[in-house]
Image 1 (cartoon, rainbow, N blue to C red):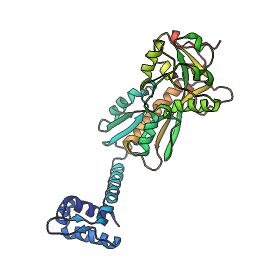
Image 2: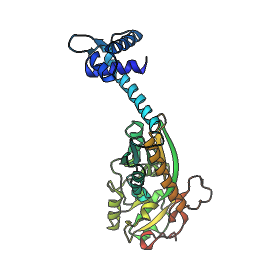
Image 3: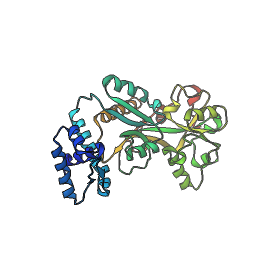
Image 4: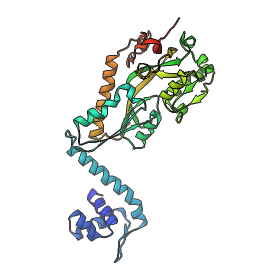
Length: 335
């Protein structure tokens, strides 16, 4: 079975005749007929019902068609990738990012990439990391930045950076000491990422800790976005959690207080891609730029290693280094 045979078969089915397929492929009609005949001989089954008006597929032909189309698409994509190697004169970069990507300085990624490769289209999908992992597994996007843990079947995952997660309250009394899971389970919580709930990576970590402690965490309010959760906290509706990148941002509401977890909690940012599918040149370059951006952010906020903890993927953020932040909004009192 050859690509020429499969291409002749697919074009004959699409156009309805060997003559039309021959014109499309710029070969003699007899060549198309012969390629299809050899394919039928090899498979031991007729692929077309031949009539004077139009070719129609047999049951065997219907079974073969999607596989033949996939094989031709893969071959054409591979040829295009090799021909455009190093030039990035076209193509599409498909990449997933966390919905809070702007807090990690990723908003400039598209602009930087477009300025370097103006002929390349970019499809940047912002969603929960659980959804990003599933989209990569299903081939909907090629790669993406995710927060761990995720379901990683058939994925290659490379951790890049840790960002410490903090408890946030408008009441300074609730942040005087590091937060424990037992106290968290009793708190009135406003948690974001409502759609994915406890599949969200940060929430998964909390759920696992709660299970080990024999308690349950049940938020009073669940909404989609961290910004909305912070507004509710500022209005003293309840308390929430957020990463250092969010707490250190200019948009973090004033008057809020933070406390670390007694057993420090981290969002680990990682690059994920499908183990069995090579990246297109465009997506490979976009992933490289995204990785460089995260590594530069980590280098700018190197963090210090907590005693007895693995320093392979350093944390970021001034709270991960034990420093105080700006004004009331990041004041941690471990008294």
